[in-house]
Image 1 (spheres, rainbow, N blue to C red):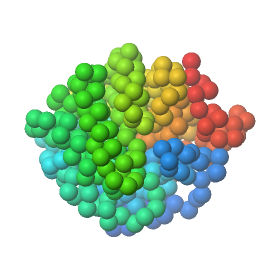
Image 2 (cartoon, rainbow, N blue to C red; image 1 turned 60 degrees about the vertical axis):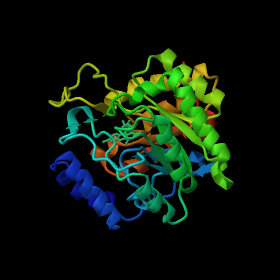
Image 3 (cartoon, rainbow, N blue to C red; image 1 turned 90 degrees about the horizontal axis):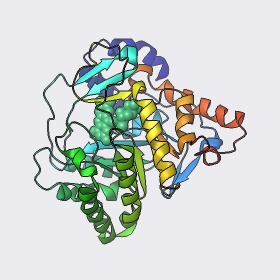
Image 4 (cartoon, rainbow, N blue to C red; image 1 turned 120 degrees about the horizontal axis):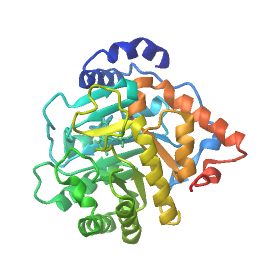
Length: 353
Ligand SMILES: Cc1cc2nc3c(=O)[nH]c(=O)nc-3n(C[C@H](O)[C@H](O)[C@H](O)COP(=O)(O)O)c2cc1C
Protein backbone atom coordinates (compact mmCIF):
# COMPACT_ATOMS: atom_id res chain seq x y z
CA UNK A 1 0.00 0.00 0.00
CA UNK A 2 2.68 2.58 0.72
CA UNK A 3 3.83 2.23 -2.91
CA UNK A 4 0.27 2.27 -4.24
CA UNK A 5 -0.36 5.30 -2.07
CA UNK A 6 2.52 7.17 -3.71
CA UNK A 7 0.38 7.13 -6.84
CA UNK A 8 -3.07 7.39 -5.28
CA UNK A 9 -2.28 9.99 -2.60
CA UNK A 10 -1.87 13.04 -4.87
CA UNK A 11 -5.00 12.05 -6.82
CA UNK A 12 -7.02 11.62 -3.66
CA UNK A 13 -5.95 15.03 -2.40
CA UNK A 14 -7.37 16.59 -5.58
CA UNK A 15 -10.82 15.25 -4.75
CA UNK A 16 -13.23 16.98 -2.42
CA UNK A 17 -12.20 15.69 1.07
CA UNK A 18 -15.25 13.56 1.77
CA UNK A 19 -15.21 12.04 -1.74
CA UNK A 20 -11.53 11.20 -1.24
CA UNK A 21 -12.36 9.60 2.09
CA UNK A 22 -15.16 7.50 0.60
CA UNK A 23 -12.87 6.39 -2.26
CA UNK A 24 -10.24 5.41 0.31
CA UNK A 25 -12.73 3.40 2.38
CA UNK A 26 -13.97 1.60 -0.75
CA UNK A 27 -10.44 0.74 -1.85
CA UNK A 28 -9.64 -0.49 1.64
CA UNK A 29 -12.80 -2.58 1.93
CA UNK A 30 -12.10 -4.15 -1.48
CA UNK A 31 -8.76 -5.32 -0.14
CA UNK A 32 -6.71 -3.02 -2.38
CA UNK A 33 -4.54 -1.80 0.46
CA UNK A 34 -2.57 -4.94 1.10
CA UNK A 35 -0.65 -5.83 4.20
CA UNK A 36 2.23 -4.11 5.95
CA UNK A 37 5.41 -6.12 5.59
CA UNK A 38 7.18 -5.04 8.77
CA UNK A 39 7.19 -6.28 12.31
CA UNK A 40 7.15 -3.78 15.13
CA UNK A 41 10.19 -3.80 17.40
CA UNK A 42 9.32 -5.67 20.65
CA UNK A 43 10.47 -2.55 22.57
CA UNK A 44 7.16 -0.99 21.44
CA UNK A 45 4.86 -3.56 23.06
CA UNK A 46 2.32 -2.15 25.49
CA UNK A 47 0.06 -4.07 27.88
CA UNK A 48 -2.93 -2.08 29.13
CA UNK A 49 -6.57 -2.73 29.91
CA UNK A 50 -5.81 -6.46 29.83
CA UNK A 51 -4.89 -6.10 26.13
CA UNK A 52 -1.51 -6.66 24.47
CA UNK A 53 -0.77 -3.99 21.88
CA UNK A 54 2.02 -4.80 19.36
CA UNK A 55 2.92 -1.09 19.33
CA UNK A 56 1.22 2.01 20.73
CA UNK A 57 0.00 3.73 17.56
CA UNK A 58 -3.73 3.36 16.89
CA UNK A 59 -6.17 4.78 14.36
CA UNK A 60 -8.27 7.52 15.97
CA UNK A 61 -12.08 7.60 15.85
CA UNK A 62 -13.75 9.21 12.85
CA UNK A 63 -11.82 7.52 10.04
CA UNK A 64 -13.88 4.33 10.16
CA UNK A 65 -17.13 5.50 11.70
CA UNK A 66 -19.15 2.46 10.61
CA UNK A 67 -16.57 -0.33 11.11
CA UNK A 68 -16.13 -0.89 7.39
CA UNK A 69 -12.35 -1.34 7.29
CA UNK A 70 -11.09 -2.47 10.68
CA UNK A 71 -9.27 -5.49 9.29
CA UNK A 72 -7.67 -3.49 6.47
CA UNK A 73 -6.41 -0.83 8.89
CA UNK A 74 -4.97 -3.45 11.23
CA UNK A 75 -3.33 -5.12 8.21
CA UNK A 76 -1.80 -1.77 7.24
CA UNK A 77 0.06 -1.85 10.53
CA UNK A 78 -1.94 0.09 13.11
CA UNK A 79 -1.49 -1.26 16.62
CA UNK A 80 -5.23 -0.89 17.23
CA UNK A 81 -8.27 0.70 15.59
CA UNK A 82 -11.13 2.72 17.09
CA UNK A 83 -14.39 2.76 15.15
CA UNK A 84 -17.16 5.36 15.51
CA UNK A 85 -18.48 7.64 16.70
CA UNK A 86 -21.64 5.52 16.50
CA UNK A 87 -24.98 6.94 17.64
CA UNK A 88 -28.00 4.75 18.48
CA UNK A 89 -29.93 5.64 15.31
CA UNK A 90 -28.36 6.41 11.92
CA UNK A 91 -27.98 10.10 11.12
CA UNK A 92 -26.75 12.04 8.11
CA UNK A 93 -24.79 14.75 9.90
CA UNK A 94 -24.44 18.38 8.86
CA UNK A 95 -24.86 19.76 5.33
CA UNK A 96 -21.85 19.49 3.00
CA UNK A 97 -19.21 20.76 2.56
CA UNK A 98 -18.19 19.88 6.10
CA UNK A 99 -14.57 18.73 5.87
CA UNK A 100 -11.84 21.17 4.86
CA UNK A 101 -8.13 20.63 4.19
CA UNK A 102 -5.54 23.08 5.48
CA UNK A 103 -2.51 21.50 3.78
CA UNK A 104 -0.04 24.26 4.60
CA UNK A 105 -0.89 23.74 8.28
CA UNK A 106 -0.97 19.93 8.18
CA UNK A 107 -4.52 20.27 9.50
CA UNK A 108 -8.18 19.56 8.84
CA UNK A 109 -11.36 21.24 9.99
CA UNK A 110 -14.47 19.07 10.16
CA UNK A 111 -18.05 19.66 11.20
CA UNK A 112 -19.39 16.28 10.14
CA UNK A 113 -21.81 16.05 13.07
CA UNK A 114 -21.68 12.29 13.74
CA UNK A 115 -22.77 11.07 10.31
CA UNK A 116 -23.01 7.30 10.82
CA UNK A 117 -25.18 4.26 10.14
CA UNK A 118 -26.15 3.61 13.75
CA UNK A 119 -25.62 0.87 16.31
CA UNK A 120 -27.29 -2.01 14.44
CA UNK A 121 -24.91 -1.73 11.49
CA UNK A 122 -21.82 -1.29 13.66
CA UNK A 123 -22.79 -4.22 15.86
CA UNK A 124 -23.38 -6.49 12.86
CA UNK A 125 -19.99 -5.59 11.37
CA UNK A 126 -18.04 -5.91 14.61
CA UNK A 127 -19.64 -9.23 15.47
CA UNK A 128 -18.74 -10.61 12.00
CA UNK A 129 -15.10 -9.53 12.29
CA UNK A 130 -12.29 -12.08 12.04
CA UNK A 131 -10.61 -12.55 15.42
CA UNK A 132 -7.23 -10.86 15.89
CA UNK A 133 -6.19 -7.28 16.43
CA UNK A 134 -7.55 -4.77 18.91
CA UNK A 135 -10.68 -2.80 17.97
CA UNK A 136 -12.34 -0.24 20.23
CA UNK A 137 -15.75 1.34 19.66
CA UNK A 138 -16.50 5.02 20.21
CA UNK A 139 -20.10 5.85 21.18
CA UNK A 140 -22.11 9.09 21.08
CA UNK A 141 -25.62 10.41 21.21
CA UNK A 142 -28.05 11.34 18.46
CA UNK A 143 -28.39 15.02 17.68
CA UNK A 144 -32.14 14.98 18.38
CA UNK A 145 -31.93 12.77 21.46
CA UNK A 146 -33.70 13.95 24.59
CA UNK A 147 -31.96 11.45 26.86
CA UNK A 148 -28.19 11.45 26.40
CA UNK A 149 -27.57 8.91 29.16
CA UNK A 150 -29.95 6.42 27.52
CA UNK A 151 -28.13 6.87 24.20
CA UNK A 152 -24.72 6.08 25.71
CA UNK A 153 -26.08 3.13 27.66
CA UNK A 154 -27.61 1.79 24.43
CA UNK A 155 -24.21 2.23 22.76
CA UNK A 156 -22.46 0.27 25.47
CA UNK A 157 -25.07 -2.49 25.41
CA UNK A 158 -24.87 -2.92 21.64
CA UNK A 159 -21.13 -2.65 21.07
CA UNK A 160 -19.34 -3.67 24.26
CA UNK A 161 -19.87 -7.41 23.63
CA UNK A 162 -18.07 -7.02 20.28
CA UNK A 163 -15.33 -4.46 20.96
CA UNK A 164 -12.11 -4.60 22.97
CA UNK A 165 -12.87 -1.28 24.66
CA UNK A 166 -15.52 1.42 24.62
CA UNK A 167 -14.84 5.15 24.31
CA UNK A 168 -17.42 7.60 25.63
CA UNK A 169 -17.28 10.58 23.29
CA UNK A 170 -18.63 13.72 24.89
CA UNK A 171 -16.08 16.00 23.28
CA UNK A 172 -16.92 16.42 19.60
CA UNK A 173 -17.64 20.07 18.85
CA UNK A 174 -20.22 19.38 16.15
CA UNK A 175 -23.23 18.13 18.12
CA UNK A 176 -24.86 21.05 19.90
CA UNK A 177 -24.67 20.71 23.69
CA UNK A 178 -22.58 17.52 23.60
CA UNK A 179 -19.55 18.99 25.28
CA UNK A 180 -21.65 20.30 28.16
CA UNK A 181 -21.65 16.67 29.32
CA UNK A 182 -18.03 17.19 30.34
CA UNK A 183 -19.11 19.30 33.31
CA UNK A 184 -18.91 17.20 36.47
CA UNK A 185 -22.62 17.64 37.33
CA UNK A 186 -23.68 16.06 34.01
CA UNK A 187 -20.74 13.72 33.71
CA UNK A 188 -21.27 11.91 37.01
CA UNK A 189 -24.71 10.45 36.21
CA UNK A 190 -23.56 9.53 32.70
CA UNK A 191 -20.44 7.69 33.81
CA UNK A 192 -22.22 6.06 36.73
CA UNK A 193 -24.95 4.76 34.41
CA UNK A 194 -22.31 3.27 32.12
CA UNK A 195 -20.38 1.64 34.94
CA UNK A 196 -23.64 0.18 36.29
CA UNK A 197 -24.57 -1.10 32.84
CA UNK A 198 -21.18 -2.76 32.63
CA UNK A 199 -21.64 -4.35 36.06
CA UNK A 200 -24.91 -5.89 34.87
CA UNK A 201 -23.27 -7.39 31.78
CA UNK A 202 -22.20 -11.01 31.49
CA UNK A 203 -18.84 -12.60 30.76
CA UNK A 204 -16.04 -10.49 29.30
CA UNK A 205 -18.40 -7.55 28.69
CA UNK A 206 -18.56 -7.05 32.47
CA UNK A 207 -14.82 -6.20 32.34
CA UNK A 208 -14.87 -4.15 29.14
CA UNK A 209 -12.56 -1.14 29.52
CA UNK A 210 -14.42 2.17 29.47
CA UNK A 211 -12.51 5.24 28.30
CA UNK A 212 -13.57 8.87 28.25
CA UNK A 213 -12.50 11.23 25.44
CA UNK A 214 -12.00 14.87 26.38
CA UNK A 215 -11.86 18.15 24.45
CA UNK A 216 -8.69 20.25 24.41
CA UNK A 217 -10.81 23.36 24.89
CA UNK A 218 -11.62 22.55 28.51
CA UNK A 219 -9.80 24.70 31.03
CA UNK A 220 -7.06 22.63 32.67
CA UNK A 221 -8.92 22.56 36.00
CA UNK A 222 -12.14 21.32 34.36
CA UNK A 223 -10.28 18.59 32.49
CA UNK A 224 -8.60 17.50 35.73
CA UNK A 225 -11.99 17.48 37.49
CA UNK A 226 -13.39 15.24 34.73
CA UNK A 227 -10.35 12.98 35.01
CA UNK A 228 -10.70 12.70 38.78
CA UNK A 229 -14.37 11.89 38.40
CA UNK A 230 -13.56 9.20 35.82
CA UNK A 231 -11.13 7.70 38.29
CA UNK A 232 -13.56 7.89 41.20
CA UNK A 233 -16.41 6.29 39.25
CA UNK A 234 -14.22 3.43 38.01
CA UNK A 235 -13.41 4.24 34.39
CA UNK A 236 -10.29 2.69 32.91
CA UNK A 237 -8.65 5.53 31.02
CA UNK A 238 -8.87 8.81 29.13
CA UNK A 239 -8.31 9.82 25.54
CA UNK A 240 -6.75 13.28 25.28
CA UNK A 241 -7.88 14.83 23.02
CA UNK A 242 -10.60 15.46 20.49
CA UNK A 243 -10.46 18.28 17.91
CA UNK A 244 -10.39 21.93 18.99
CA UNK A 245 -12.70 24.84 18.27
CA UNK A 246 -9.74 27.17 18.92
CA UNK A 247 -7.86 28.57 15.96
CA UNK A 248 -4.19 28.90 16.96
CA UNK A 249 -2.48 31.99 15.53
CA UNK A 250 -0.69 31.56 12.25
CA UNK A 251 -3.02 29.17 10.43
CA UNK A 252 -2.30 29.67 6.74
CA UNK A 253 -5.12 27.85 5.01
CA UNK A 254 -7.96 29.81 3.40
CA UNK A 255 -10.37 27.53 5.24
CA UNK A 256 -9.07 28.43 8.72
CA UNK A 257 -12.25 30.39 9.41
CA UNK A 258 -14.60 27.45 8.78
CA UNK A 259 -16.63 26.34 11.78
CA UNK A 260 -15.84 22.92 13.25
CA UNK A 261 -13.10 20.98 14.98
CA UNK A 262 -9.49 21.59 14.01
CA UNK A 263 -7.18 18.56 13.99
CA UNK A 264 -3.59 17.89 12.97
CA UNK A 265 -0.32 19.71 13.62
CA UNK A 266 -1.78 22.91 15.14
CA UNK A 267 -3.44 20.77 17.85
CA UNK A 268 -0.24 19.03 18.95
CA UNK A 269 0.94 21.60 21.51
CA UNK A 270 -2.32 22.02 23.43
CA UNK A 271 -3.33 18.35 23.34
CA UNK A 272 0.10 17.30 24.64
CA UNK A 273 0.20 19.96 27.31
CA UNK A 274 -3.25 18.93 28.57
CA UNK A 275 -2.13 15.30 28.59
CA UNK A 276 0.82 16.28 30.78
CA UNK A 277 -1.38 18.25 33.16
CA UNK A 278 -3.80 15.34 33.60
CA UNK A 279 -0.96 12.85 34.03
CA UNK A 280 0.57 14.99 36.76
CA UNK A 281 -2.63 15.99 38.54
CA UNK A 282 -4.01 12.45 38.67
CA UNK A 283 -0.65 11.14 39.89
CA UNK A 284 -0.49 8.73 36.96
CA UNK A 285 -3.53 6.84 38.23
CA UNK A 286 -5.36 6.66 34.89
CA UNK A 287 -3.97 5.27 31.64
CA UNK A 288 -3.93 8.03 29.01
CA UNK A 289 -4.19 7.69 25.24
CA UNK A 290 -2.48 10.65 23.59
CA UNK A 291 -3.99 11.97 20.37
CA UNK A 292 -3.89 15.28 18.52
CA UNK A 293 -1.32 16.36 15.96
CA UNK A 294 0.94 13.31 15.83
CA UNK A 295 2.81 13.40 12.51
CA UNK A 296 6.27 12.10 13.42
CA UNK A 297 8.14 9.80 15.79
CA UNK A 298 9.20 12.90 17.75
CA UNK A 299 5.54 13.87 18.24
CA UNK A 300 4.70 10.34 19.39
CA UNK A 301 7.64 10.36 21.80
CA UNK A 302 6.62 13.76 23.19
CA UNK A 303 3.20 12.38 24.09
CA UNK A 304 4.71 9.31 25.77
CA UNK A 305 7.07 11.53 27.75
CA UNK A 306 4.05 13.65 28.75
CA UNK A 307 2.38 10.53 30.16
CA UNK A 308 0.61 8.64 27.35
CA UNK A 309 0.81 4.85 27.28
CA UNK A 310 -0.94 4.58 23.91
CA UNK A 311 -1.36 6.95 20.95
CA UNK A 312 -3.76 7.60 18.11
CA UNK A 313 -3.69 9.64 14.93
CA UNK A 314 -5.94 10.53 12.03
CA UNK A 315 -5.11 13.79 10.24
CA UNK A 316 -1.47 13.03 9.40
CA UNK A 317 -2.66 9.88 7.63
CA UNK A 318 -4.56 12.07 5.16
CA UNK A 319 -1.43 13.95 4.16
CA UNK A 320 1.22 11.27 4.53
CA UNK A 321 -0.52 7.97 3.83
CA UNK A 322 -0.22 4.64 5.57
CA UNK A 323 3.59 4.42 5.35
CA UNK A 324 3.55 6.90 8.23
CA UNK A 325 2.57 4.19 10.72
CA UNK A 326 5.75 2.22 10.12
CA UNK A 327 7.83 5.42 9.97
CA UNK A 328 6.57 6.53 13.38
CA UNK A 329 6.84 3.08 14.97
CA UNK A 330 10.41 2.56 13.78
CA UNK A 331 11.41 6.10 14.66
CA UNK A 332 9.91 5.73 18.12
CA UNK A 333 11.80 2.49 18.74
CA UNK A 334 14.97 4.35 17.76
CA UNK A 335 14.26 7.25 20.12
CA UNK A 336 13.60 4.90 23.04
CA UNK A 337 16.84 3.01 22.39
CA UNK A 338 18.80 6.24 21.95
CA UNK A 339 17.71 7.42 25.39
CA UNK A 340 18.43 4.08 27.03
CA UNK A 341 14.82 3.02 27.63
CA UNK A 342 13.88 -0.64 27.32
CA UNK A 343 10.16 -0.04 26.83
CA UNK A 344 7.47 2.59 26.31
CA UNK A 345 6.58 2.13 29.97
CA UNK A 346 10.07 3.18 31.10
CA UNK A 347 9.90 6.41 29.08
CA UNK A 348 6.31 7.24 29.96
CA UNK A 349 5.92 10.48 31.88
CA UNK A 350 9.65 11.11 32.00
CA UNK A 351 9.29 14.43 30.20
CA UNK A 352 6.29 15.62 32.20
CA UNK A 353 7.02 19.03 33.64
C1 LIG B 1 -12.70 14.08 9.71
C2 LIG B 1 -12.62 13.76 11.17
C3 LIG B 1 -13.67 13.10 11.80
C4 LIG B 1 -13.60 12.80 13.16
N1 LIG B 1 -14.64 12.13 13.74
C5 LIG B 1 -14.54 11.78 15.05
C6 LIG B 1 -15.57 11.03 15.67
O1 LIG B 1 -16.55 10.63 15.05
N2 LIG B 1 -15.44 10.76 16.99
C7 LIG B 1 -14.34 11.14 17.72
O2 LIG B 1 -14.27 10.84 18.93
N3 LIG B 1 -13.34 11.83 17.15
C8 LIG B 1 -13.41 12.15 15.84
N4 LIG B 1 -12.40 12.85 15.27
C9 LIG B 1 -11.25 13.29 16.10
C10 LIG B 1 -10.08 12.34 16.03
O3 LIG B 1 -10.41 11.07 16.56
C11 LIG B 1 -8.88 12.91 16.83
O4 LIG B 1 -9.25 13.02 18.20
C12 LIG B 1 -8.46 14.29 16.34
O5 LIG B 1 -8.57 14.38 14.94
C13 LIG B 1 -7.03 14.64 16.74
O6 LIG B 1 -6.10 13.74 16.17
P1 LIG B 1 -5.28 14.07 14.81
O7 LIG B 1 -4.68 15.44 15.01
O8 LIG B 1 -4.25 12.99 14.70
O9 LIG B 1 -6.26 14.04 13.71
C14 LIG B 1 -12.43 13.16 13.91
C15 LIG B 1 -11.38 13.81 13.27
C16 LIG B 1 -11.44 14.10 11.92
C17 LIG B 1 -10.28 14.79 11.26
